[in-house]
Image (tube, rainbow, N blue to C red; front, top):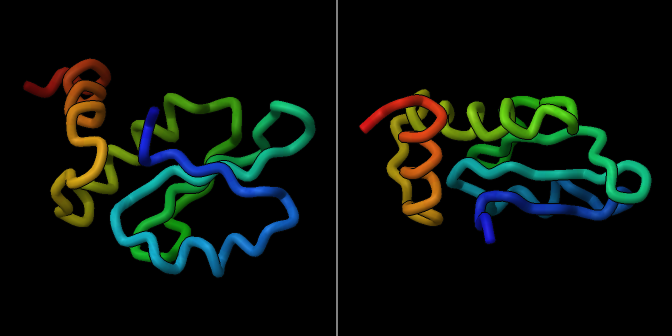
Amino acid sequence: MFADLFEFQRDSDVDSQIKDFVQPKIVVVPGEVLNMDLLHIIVEGSTFCSIPGEKMVDAVLALLSTFYVFNISYTHSKGILAFLEETLLGLP
């Protein structure tokens, strides 16, 4: 599926689990059944930003933006990210 999207349990220690994430990722901490409270963009083991759960498109755009902000190359999910970049942002 989408290798840059991770889901953690609500009671898990998210900080200890994200410390090894270097490449930008979307992390989901679920709320009630099948609802997402917040989507977090994680870069280099830290939360870069948090986005309300119903704004998945905003989270994907924020994820793509972090690659430009930090000048990071796509290493994982290269095809999917390139497709989203072209589709959502109109970049060739």
